[in-house]
Length: 433
Image (cartoon, rainbow, N blue to C red; front, side, top):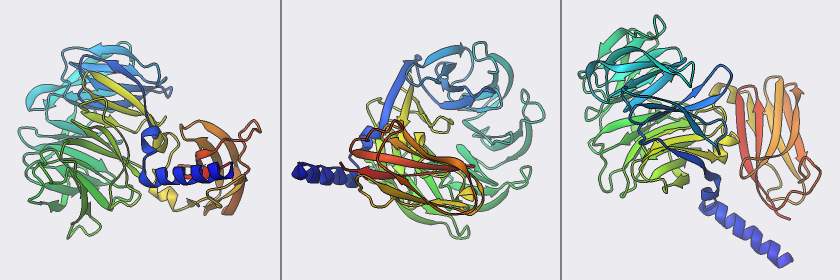
């Protein structure tokens, strides 16, 4: 028995070291045939219910509250289905090209009875900030910023500039303008009506600056090259801490696949590949992309959306919508709020591996309610160790290897998660019986 335990321990460690357990962490919960699948975005209504908004020869609304039993609530015909985003209870959808009044606005406050309530000049892509400003790219061709706050059904243009725009991302007070063959421009939009160009990235090895995102510290920028060929990186990593001199520090290449979009949540980058499905990268070291999990059985993937509060991941492509669970998002592997992270920290447990007890330490630089819980590798709650108000200070909590019913938890990998205000972080530990 001792020999078996010894071998099992090293087998599990080897699997963890090689990343071979990642396939077990990304699970296809359900999928639905919508007759097509272009872009996908999420929508949360006033009651906290979650929906997927999918381009599918029009726009489909899919209830995803039960990830294992998703269903379409409505479909809107005769509207563009190439790219869309959601703000408030409206969907803004475009054709992928220019056209007066070609973009449409759909009111989805009633997810069973949506209605078209407005139009605007179509573009290739749109991005909408949380504060209600829409950036439209490739409009005749130029970049346009609209104010949606005045009248969401009639967007008001407040700034126009640039040439050959393709896609945009707004994070904080920066606009990342991915300008196709013209490079990537980074603007300061502290004054949204008067963007100020901070720097431009032009690299002869990038064929087409398609789309991108930054790490949670906004120190590194990931740029997707949709037309990368051969050994040219699909994704390049740029250190933008010095805007006077952005530096390329790394990349990721898949010679047999074509990348589309990338989104960052916490310490993971969720990437859709036309020919390689969903690929999730660990970016704990933001200058390095390490594959944490992937699923290429669903075929061509157009879009990915990891930002729903429940932690499920939406992907679109092929004939419709797919819903995945991933322990990194379900259990909140990383902090999404960099400011909150300065006030809290979660330590690695010790001993690790352990049997039967281990200690978990954390630091609070500010008082607040803190929750510490243990989950299994599928994201199911094993035991809540702590859920109470604590003053600022250093703390240590012990887990005795038992579940919430008092029974011994089996050998395996577990996740422990700390939540304090807007801060969420988690780490892995290994129980070996």
